[in-house]
Image (cartoon, rainbow, N blue to C red; front, side, top):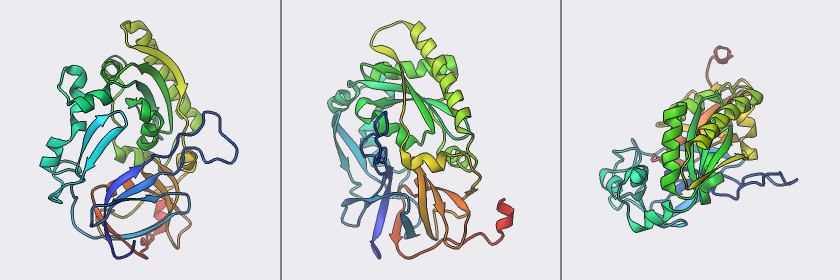
Length: 317
């Protein structure tokens, strides 16, 4: 991959979901991968495992459009690359691709918003409602389609999570999600920066499990009393990928001291929670938390690069 510029589309967990009861010798959850677009528009995947070394430089300023999606059904969609290779003006999209993206219509579907037939077919599959808790105890309510039931939480970087309802379609599950936010006060988003900051000093697993269990229980009580049709209350624990274990373990580590939006970088991935890596720098015994999500929509070039170790390490303790 040296000397070729790649546009980073993000970190994805598309491997098989782990078994609810771990199988000896198997790495639960498969491997995540960084999805890359080469100059010809071909999408490739760089597997991220414990021990993977990433060395790269930022090859262009700013962010670039990642294109848009056309959804044809529950497991059928097209990823259309940006024909203009334009700068990103709305998150990781240009204005044109943002308008053309089917996924932006999802959040208004349960309020009567119109959607194309393919997106409607996707939304009419079964969906799951979950409560996820992150490394500092911050929690959220969220939804996942049946086909992405496990993967959604893996990409969210949850430390512990429980499913609280199974809905017959995406309209019902979003009505339930709004109800839990309104009546239980659970937000529907936890910012990526907050997730990364929390992994610098994660709370004890037993504390996080207790928080998640309590909030999930409150959500189930609300759901059970809500009445209505189209869903059933469930009590099911999400299985976290093994590769996330070290990142989520209670330990003192340090925030990565460099801006991923510029310069050169190099480190070894030791563990990964969502798109946030626990990484080692050459020449240092310290562990650093690196939010690889900050590379999304940026142009990079791989090479034998390394990240500078902070000059005064004592200040990090």
